[in-house]
Length: 207
Figure 1 (tube, rainbow, N blue to C red):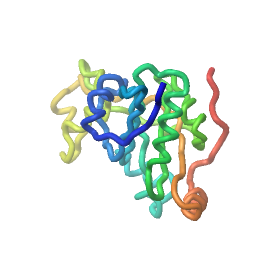
Figure 2: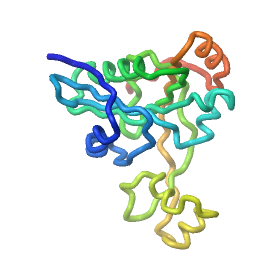
Figure 3: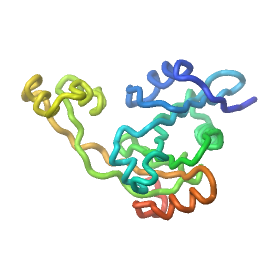
């Protein structure tokens, strides 16, 4: 069995990701890599600019916000043994430049980030408590997708209430395990880690 990881285009992976990832939403993609097993696309990992500006600043301050990228999608066709960690580890080596990679493991999906632990990411605790915008009858949509309907509109929440009335509501967002990985020169990794604002701790374990 041959196994390799290659850089791929957005077009190469769009259908694969949207069909398999639970979020059913296409994020910002700057880099995409595919896992090929015997010549067949069997996994995809993507990286892009985080949608949250506070997140980029919050990791290590303004001096490093432009270095932050998010591992925002990881999908496997069959999720065979070690396939996810092989794909992530190889893709990290293929990224160029000084970067701080952040990724999240969604507690609501039963994830604790085993793949990130296997790839030696640093664990920096749980994401902050937040709420998502929801509309009755559209619960399958991501909260950001709902908010994007009135992107650029002043006082978006009021615009949502004016359109949807009582069908618009707020729902607590499930907290997520946050993982970090530093890439680049030794000097960058040393200085960026020194500026890290999150407290590092031991990996979470399965219940």
